[in-house]
Amino acid sequence: MIIAIDGPAASGKGTLARRIAAHYGLSYLDTGAIYRAVARDVKRAGGDLTDAAAATRAARALDASTLDDPALRERGAGEAASIVAGFAEVRGALLDFQRAFARKAPGAVLDGRDIGTVVLPDADVKIFVVAEPEVRAQRRYAEMAGRGEPVTYARVLDLIRQRDERDRGRAEAPLKAAADALLLDTTHLDIEAAFEAAVALISRKIGQ
Ligand code: DC
Image (cartoon, rainbow, N blue to C red; front, side, top):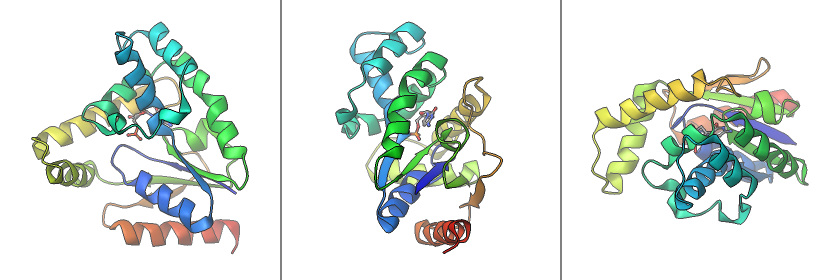
């Protein structure tokens, strides 16, 4: 079974995808980490994130064993990823890896922005996770403040709105729900309730 989970930044899709993968005994791939790693590698090579050729080189040379690098969770890593993710050549260079990962037994859950639309249009189940930007900002802010990071709620909300705009507005594989995606609004749901709602959607879809 292959499950595609897409949604905007801080929608809770990563936590949800990880739990769904564990629940069904599937592998899990956080595709956002791939774009974060490309941005990290461009910067480490002294390049500019807006340089398509440098980003494409980094994407082609990506070492998948570095996707759990804590640097990918540092401040600014998501925004940097969103910039390199706008280049068609970068996205193209990462497609085969994502598809091969999904096809390996026992199946997988992939989360990202374009999994249901571009990477795995034939996924067995597609879930599109949404939540109001204010709620996503509040969750992200609580997380960052909990780690002692010096941020304000207003700044986090601003960054989330900018990232939504960039991820939705780009020409290449923009963030959008596939026509056959099941919508899951987590605005009023905590992690547990969102997980239960997702399992209910999946069970209905696969007829179990
Ligand atoms: O899910 P995330 O916040 O880790 O993703 C970081 C950025 O990477 C996101 O803002 C846009 C890009 N991304 C993408 O374009 N396509 C994906 N499938 C996953 C992430």
